Length: 370
Image 1 (tube, rainbow, N blue to C red):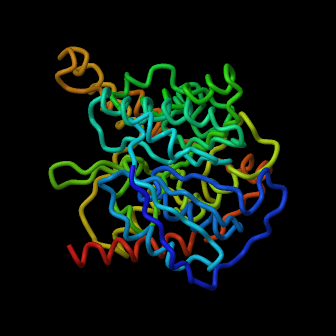
Image 2 (cartoon, rainbow, N blue to C red; image 1 turned 90 degrees about the vertical axis):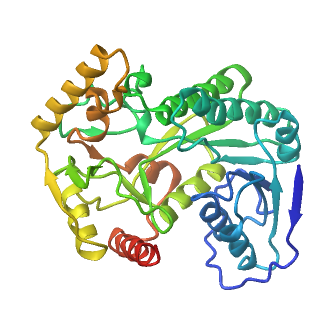
């Protein structure tokens, strides 16, 4: 394991928020795993904004550090941020990186894996290793595990009803053929089990669709591109968006707020756009393209046919777009952030209108440089 120390922390101008009602002091050491990923640098920024001054950042040996280094360069002079190279599959690395930490923000996860075994290895096994190492630290106050909206089944939720933290999780995510959702559910099981059996002081966050500069694709909740044609499946559904900076603030608060151990929180922004509005804005602000709207009854029928053929072909066609996926991604559903607002005192720092403007501008810049 290699540690890079950054002595030049002379950035100024950070907005400081009140550091009150916290389980730790501003000088307590906190750990951020996955610190070089899409979300990681923003979480480090939020921690600094909330007044924390000692942050250990874990990055994989192959990770690019440009964005994280930029955050470090702009940090206040009293901040101490260390970048540690390591792998959570190594128990020794986990013991080293968790030494003396008080709060762990576990963002690292296996993304993009198609195989269930790979997703399990890089999200579940790594989480188990990290939890077991963390439990050996006498000063541990909180373990924040980042999950996903995709862990919900939504099957028993009526059309147009609100999906909140009381809704059931998917009992069999493998039916969706979605390795990421499967791994996230198993990751939650690991964390909650250690909470019950070893008193791990955990909090779980389930962000919706995290968007912002650096994440430019159109999410599958809006539709699917196929053979040069985009199938618009979302229609009038609202999309559970959360802008990356708003989500980072929620994650930061989950690690320091008192009285929330053992709870799970959904993270979505205010003023959520419909799928139709999002697609229209993308076409007008980023690039126009051809799309065909598929009404909900038709999309459900297509998913049913996909599921039947997948079963008939004995898995030759994966069950990715079966009825279970329709329930999660395209069934008309409403979302709420009332729980996280009341329990954590979280509020949306970047308004949705500004967040969408920033996002589409970033998408346009990326396409123009492609």
